[in-house]
Image (cartoon, rainbow, N blue to C red; front, side):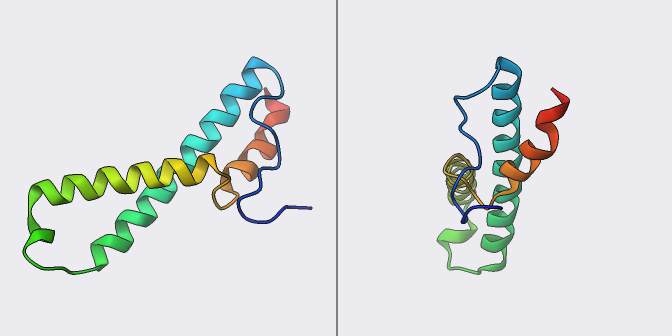
Amino acid sequence: MLGPIGAKATDATAGTAEQKKLRSACEEFESVMLGIVFKQMSASAKGGMLDQSAANKTWRDMLEDERAKSMAKAGGIGLADALYRDLVDRV
């Protein structure tokens, strides 16, 4: 049974070194996927003159990446947990 969104199914500190690497890779994958979603959402929002500057675009990209990493570390949407459960028996 899966827990609520944001609840990790497994503890990142438990297991072998290989399992820790797998957990980290799964969280990184979820972070990348969430970053893509966030960037698509912000690309659809139109703004004023400031939104068109290169500096503001860079800042928004960095913010979205950090937001995605933070969300994935906190449990995300469950993608990392699902991947980990599917792959942990193979390491």
